[in-house]
Image 1 (cartoon, one colour):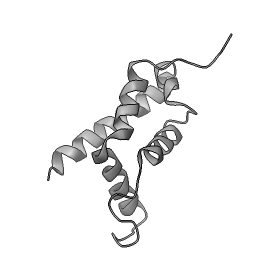
Image 2 (cartoon, one colour):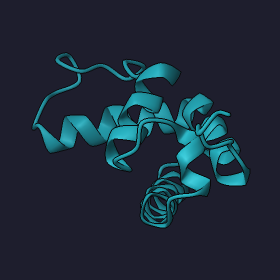
Image 3 (tube, helix red, strand yellow):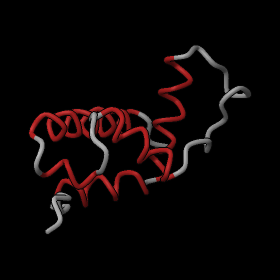
Image 4 (cartoon, helix red, strand yellow):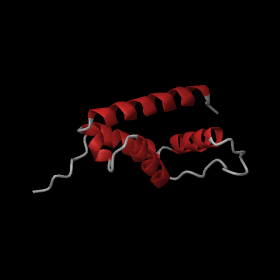
Length: 94
């Protein structure tokens, strides 16, 4: 019997978010701002879907996106990240 949590709605939302080119761009710009880098040091398009996944699981303190549906603290962190991204996306429409 496997004890690995199965992914539900939040895990699927997280997977789609990590595939989103706008979210990857958000992570590029967030890292640039946080580490005071310029665009030549960290160009747009640097983060991949895999980078986004790695960043998200680290930020939520989990090992798999599937845990989002069974870990209330991780789920709350994910919702906060998604809300911040959505606010950023609204302000940064091309």
